[in-house]
Amino acid sequence: MATANKQQQLDAIKQQIIDNKIAPALAATATQLVFGDGNVDADIVFIGEAPGKNEDLQGLPFVGAAGKFLNEMLQTIDLERKDIYITNIVKYRPPDNRDPLPAEKKAFLPYLQSQLEVIQPKVVVTLGRHSLNCFLPDLQISKVHGEPKRVRLSLKDEADVLEVVILPLYHPAAALYNPGQRQTLFADFALIPTILNKI
Image (cartoon, rainbow, N blue to C red):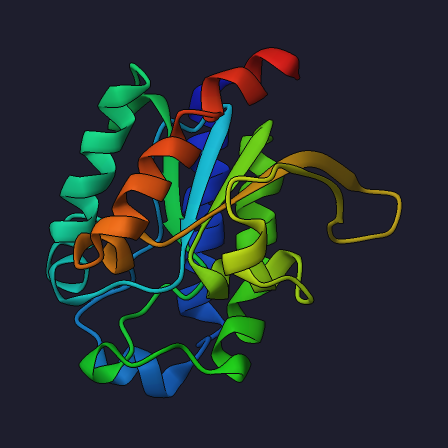
């Protein structure tokens, strides 16, 4: 699929979220929709939970302190933001940066799946427990971080399946204030090139 075509499809998904008035209460308190950013042909998609204050203002995911830390980690595996695609489950900032509610995550999930369907990544890196539990609800991040899981995501209809490797990681925001988690995150991050090579 041509890159321009993929971008048009992603723009259409973004517009659907607005037209279908997904999570109207969140939309009312947010500055704007934060859809996603990066390379639409990426092999790796990073998925966080929801935009924070900086993301809400700039309309881009992971542009605050956690985003800077993510960029730092990408450099350790010779990647840049332009090499990957990054998004969140929930596309509007929850008030006061509270955790996204189950109903909010559920409302946005079909659109996230559509994003993945268009991009067709080989690896989905989940950042934090909310993101992990969207795909693998029974797992605990503290137990499975850094362990790649091969999953089949059934998208719109049963016949339409995307096979990806999910790599659960701690959320960069959590690791910013926790030196132990920070080291763990760097170690887990270092696995990404190996996983890509194996695929």
